[in-house]
Every structure is written in structure tokens, then in C-alpha cells.
Image (cartoon, rainbow, N blue to C red; front, side, top):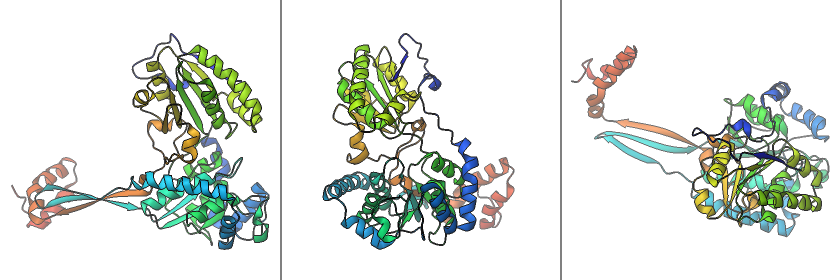
Length: 444
């Protein structure tokens, strides 16, 4: 069901182990560019008409407009199962608690008397938030995208999610996104929602259409075509990341409960056939017991075929190591989107991790908690990008702007240094710009 990689007795060089030794899903964003480029160009030139055509071609639905009517949002919320509403409200409440504390404050530094530099934190003006709607409808992703944008102070928030063939939306003309996604938008006060998926949704955000104004930034996970469109349009729009298939890594020793470990690996394999589930352990006995648990638990779960494909894929494995130190080297090289630490003294081990999108400490902090109600964000770097990138946060929606304020005397004091450096770089006009303020005399 799941392969093994035995690194016991292997050399672990100081610079880190070779990432190519570790399992990883094949996710060639570059190869998809040829498919998404004409789609994006079509949306650029034909706007809403192109989006309607692609909804018919890719989603099998007929639209007369792409923007979701306000009445559909209110109806979705009114018809939402009360238990789901309560769960979403709690998820929103906890996410706000965490993300509100991420707000940045302006700082002013006096460099010299009369000379200050202030860093102002300014939210982007308008964002497009993408919510997947393929194998599952991710209402939780609405929460994870919208809450940090709102806490950052973004004024213009638009959400897009693929239209669905069959749901309550027939009364509004059909082809609306999943009603739970619409209800989550309504709960959060977001009334600008679009029924568009895939690369065409990213192009809509980037170029704008008759219904949707262009945005400055696009965030949210999606399939390979969404990731490829983000790569293609990056520069015209800002992006959070090129999200790949979801990943879980579990670093465990003999103290871990194999039932917990197997259940957590399965929980992420449930997302997609390309989802990665990796166990790194010092215990052969634990590995064997987890493998038995996987067989039993997968057989009893709903999406067993999808999960079996993910666990058997090259992206999933049990990795055996000699020590926890070696296990840390493996998980740092892997840079998992989600990393669970199920070891003795798990908090101390977790504190030593350098590369992970989010770290879940101990037996009672499973990834599923972070997916919904921990208060943390579940939009996280994948594909090893955790070694250089962070998950979605309030900071993702802010820009730092330096404001330089110098008096005449403060400028005069440093002019000779500026002129010297400008001349050294053969940029004499830079120095002349300062000399002009002092009758062409450089203060000594």
C-alpha cells in the first residue's frame, strides 16, 4: 500500500540530505503553461463571454452571467445546515483571534537628528481569492483566505469558485458555486462572488471583465492549471504561491500511537490522488503497525480508492532513520506543507524544525484541526517551498512602504557620502541632485 525508504546507516551530510531521495508528487506547472496561455488570452480579449464558454466546456454548466446574485448568497446562508453554520462561525472566530494579532504597526526610526525613516504597512487595494471546487468543496478555504485579508484592512475582496452542475442554484439560473461556499462568503460579509474556476478565474482577476474589476493580488490553492495561470500572470498580479498537491509528513518515534498516525496520513491522502503522505520514524515496529492500520482504516473509509492511489504513489512513503536528529534532517529537507511531531518531548523536537508550512505538536494537534478550527491558516507552501516561503497570513495582504523625511541640516551632513558613492558607481547625476540643494557646494 505504501513504499519504504530505508535511510538507516546512510550518511547525513552537514549541508542537508539530497531532496531527490525523498518522495514527491509529479506536478509540472511549466508543462501546463501551453494549455493555460490561450485560455488566459481569451479571457483577456473576450471577458465574460469567454468565461461563460469555459464554464460550458470544463464544468458542463450554462451561465448567463458569472457574478453570483446577492439573493443566491443570502439564500445559501438561510438554507445552510445549522450545525455547519455553527462550525463555520467557530472557525471564523478562532481564525480572527489568531490573525488579528498579526497586524503590523507603523514604525518610525530616527536615523540622525532631523532624519527619520518610517515603515508604513498598507493593505493592497483589491484581492481575488480563489476557492477550489473539484473533488471537494472547500468552504474552509473561504475562511482561510477572507479572514486575513479582512484583518489586513483590504477594502476590495472578490471570491471565485467553479460553478457546479447540480445544487440549489437552479432557481437562480443554475451553475453557481457550491452553496456551502456561498454561505461562508455571506457569513463573512463578502458579496462579490464569481462562478469561475481554473485558469480562467485567475485570468478574470488579472485582466478584469465586464463584471469583475482587475485585482492587485490573487491568493488561494487550486489545481495545476490554477498554479500555472498564477505563474503566467505573476507580475501583472501578485500571487501567494503556486500551490501543489497537499502534503503531510509525520515525524514519529516508538511512543507514537499507530492508530493516530495512520488516521492522519489517510486524512490528507483523502484530498487527491496526488496527495502526499510521509511517515519518518526511528521505529520499525511503529512503521509495521502503521502499515497494518492503514490497510484496516482505508478499507473502512469513504474515499478508499482515491486514498489507496495517493498512498501507493511515488509521493508517499515510510522513511526509516536511526535517530530523531536524522529524522529532523529528513523533514527539513522535505519541507512539508503540514508536519506532525509525534515523539517523546514533542514540543522540544518541534522547536528544532526549520522548514515546514505548519507544525502540529503531539498527539492532540492533528492536521485536521489546522484545516478547520485551530485558528491557524491552512493555505500553506507545498512542494518543498516551506524552505523559503510562509503560509497565508495578514502579512500576505500588506505592503511595507518606507517614508523618508530629512531636514536640510540632516541632508547636508551626509551629502558628501552620497556624492562619493554616486561617483564611485559612475552616476554623477545622483550626486548633482544633492549639490543642487546647496549651491553646488558639497559640505565638508
